[in-house]
Length: 151
Image (cartoon, helix red, strand yellow):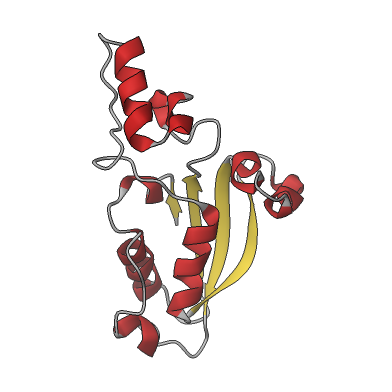
């Protein structure tokens, strides 16, 4: 189980790979993170993050001169969109998506299907994943050959 960690690691694929490695075949993973396009995607830098990682940071620093951000895009905060994370998981081949929902409003899971607004409305995305029953501890052959892309 992880909560609000994925957006803080440089290599999201490596993190997902390590989680998959330590879960037994047939076991479950809970993965939660704040999507970049959500209202708090830039953490304390919000709403300036909507300008993009670089311009948003410049705008934040211009407005809040005395208050440097704890989370700096590209250093301690990384852009994570749900579509990209789902691609990382699909590319592995040893994890299956059981459910995807907004963490704080799981009954509103239908928002993930809203074109162009899914990540914004998802706010804090939660994935429930299951490791394939036949997958070994090292993951799928594709994953062990380096089939995942960096996050």
